[in-house]
Image 1 (spheres, rainbow, N blue to C red):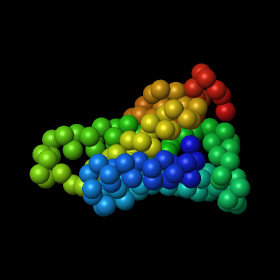
Image 2 (cartoon, rainbow, N blue to C red):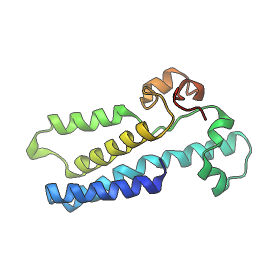
Image 3 (cartoon, rainbow, N blue to C red):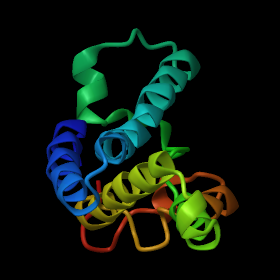
Image 4 (cartoon, rainbow, N blue to C red):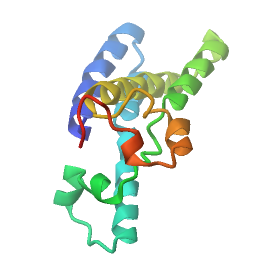
Length: 149
């Protein structure tokens, strides 16, 4: 899913969060959590440009076709493990001591992961960071049987 779509969905979700909790800072953190994970694509594209001696362009970056060229998928800020950590923190921290920032980030980040899991052509295990690491980041291991890049 594109960052623009994540921003739209995150904004809508943040309005729901604002209405439910009446916490402006939690709602803003929700937007951040829904968009910030995609900054890893910038890091990944810059690594690709460096490794393949390619001059970076917005057009090439926007298509995402460089994944096919490099045959690896790192997306280091995309991992269900981070969702689990956020949820565990919120569950065990105690209602009085919960960080509203962590609550908003966790809600937004979880929505990002759900939308990517549904909308991208990665298989069901591919958004687990440890699984990608175990498979040496090889793109062929992560593509869904539904669609191939």
